[in-house]
Image (cartoon, rainbow, N blue to C red; front, side, top):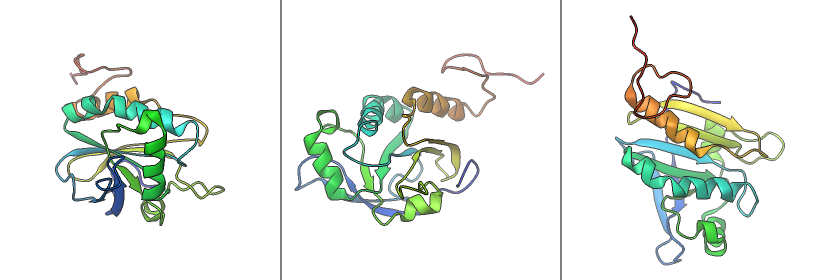
Length: 179
C-alpha cells in the first residue's frame, strides 16, 4: 500500500457531481485540483449500509474542508451509473457537495494497494494529499468499520500547521516547541 511520503498516483476517472443525468458526469484527474490539498476517501460498495454514513459525514463537513483549501473526493470501484443511481435514491446522498469517482477498472485502487483480497473492492481508505501531490496521511479500516471524519479534518488541520502537534491537538491550540 502507498503511504506517507509517497506520490499519489496519476488518475483520470469519471465522476458524478449531481443527480441530474444531463449534468451528473465529469472527468476528474490528478491535475483537476492541482495546488490544493485533497482528501481522497474510498468505500467498498454503493448501496450498502456503513458507506452512506461516512459519505454523508464528509458531505456535512465539506465546507470545513473547503475553508482549509482542501478538495474532498470520494471513490469506490462502482461505475458512475451506479453512483448516480445511489445518489438519486438515497436521501443522505442527493446533495453531496463533492465528486464521487468511479474506479470501475480498479486502476487507482490497485496502484494505491487498497483492494480487499477476498472481495476485490476498495477498503475504507483515506488519504490526505498535499498541494505537491505527496501523501501526508493514510488510513485504512476494515470493511465493517466506518471512519471518523472529524479525525480526518483534525489531521488536515495539524498537517497544515507544519508544526509538531501533540496527541489530541485541536486547531487553535498551542503546538509543541523544541527547546
